[in-house]
Length: 315
Image (cartoon, rainbow, N blue to C red; front, side, top):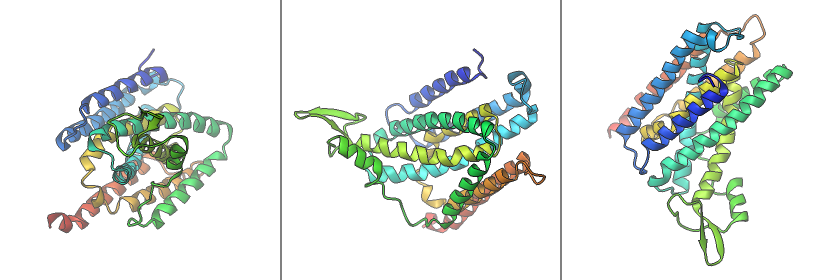
């Protein structure tokens, strides 16, 4: 079993998830520790990118990509998925606040969210790749969906926060179970004199599962505009999600400062949608240009956001 087969990479992913879970044991994650691990996950993705550049032809001898094309496609997809995943952090912070999730169990909840996202994206990548192979017109459906999502983000008001307290997952859990008033550590179900009763943690997990579905619907069509190589799509998603927990604890206190992130993501999704529409034409946008646009957009949004909010931070 090769490391670069789907089976081998699945084993590697499980090992990396176990390592991520181990480094957040005890429930207490400091900003310094989270920052170090965030850099580690980014460095690991970049190291994998170097391996692709050196050995892609041996890894995928039947691929039409050259080594440099595969490495560029992976890096572009990774940065795209990483950028989109930051939007997940806003929603995670919102969910934790609305449901008063204790800080001690937040790392475990985030891990469940990441695992759920990996499983969902794996399924959607397999389905999406098969659809694109069998039905070329699906490409334009994906493009239209990305343009629509970008438009929604453009119109979205940052001051309007979504209320998850009466969402479908909450109603479903409350319909199927009695729900206790208090958290019981990381327990999802407990027993009382009337039988099994769900803790609020079950509701939180159900809500995060729903958000995993929503974010997968955005990110998977987007990365297929960068590359149709399923292995590159899968690995870019895995590496982007692996550092999500550590990144959350680094940015937890700074999320409100990224005021230009949503417009930046709206622009990126719209740009990727246009790229997908032009893929089979003479005006196709090369992947290196897409890489440059993503880096420039996110960098500008971050620098502009920090500059605009510097006065509020200083005071």
